[in-house]
Length: 427
Image 1: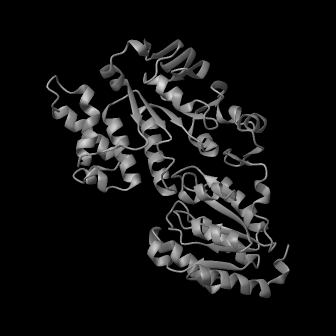
Image 2: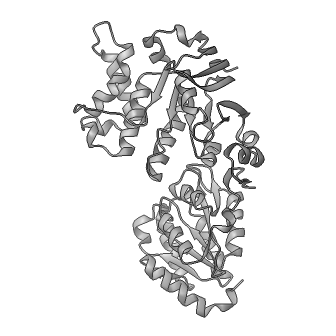
Image 3: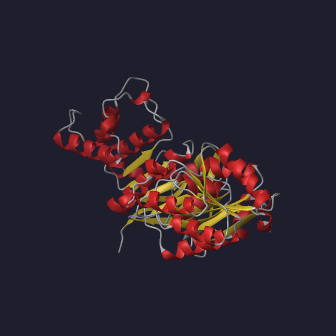
């Protein structure tokens, strides 16, 4: 049985003359990944500050690893809690290595100088977060995503039992957000470090979390698994807008969107394009197709892939597989169903390896059904499959009539031409 890391018992908390949290009770077990969700101003940040003793509760008790957090010395709290800041301010020209070593301050000897063990732990943290090659770079020279990985390395060097993040990745672009989240999930899974994560993205929270805590007006209104908490009626009431929750029948993943989102992309051309993408190759492709008036479906994609993130943001019907997993039979069948409903199939500039080669079966079957297929050129440069299998297969597809496209303008012209050549594809 996992031990309890954090408990709130009837906690009310806030700021001088301004209460924010009211009678909050919950507990967090070792190794859990928990997302705090709720509208702006509901008390998520205040809850984290109360948990880390930056704010003392007006009433109730907060315990950390069985100890009253108010009675812990700062050095004791620092050894238990790692807080990932939204941004690290570095007024001086500190190197990455120096920033990460700051995570060891609470564990250093009485003279405040790092020992051999401190250097070993800091180096392991940098390796784990993939910033070791940046150790001699000035922190201020780094990109936002690199800085956030350094912040994670610094917190990991503390060797905390729980990591807390207050919207620490919301400002990053999709690629960097995915990268930091994957590191965080690895830390949680492999090192059994508990994570308490503030998020505004309900679908993402459902995907990465064991449990959700839903706050509204300073009160805890729901706690449970994503399926238990993400109920459309409850969310619509808390967020004061009409929301819908859809569950992928194959992967079980939940998608939360506006109830009006079905009207977001009206598909005036009455044409559907199924896109095979991945690795960021679909982001601009989706956008251009939607702007041109096409309906768009996509898959199979791996969850946490930047194209999966983009598909969710655009409210596309996407078939997803588990992160970093080869595509299985069930999601492939689901994508096949989407392909059958589509008028055209477009293969983006997706890199191919053993795990996603089966996506090419969709293109083969689309051609067999006389659907126009369009394949991005340059396959030789992005084929990492054994024996260049993707190059061989796309060569066969071209021989059977699949067309090459170079730029997005080329693709749009080919699709426009196909409109005239294949009027029977009209739904």
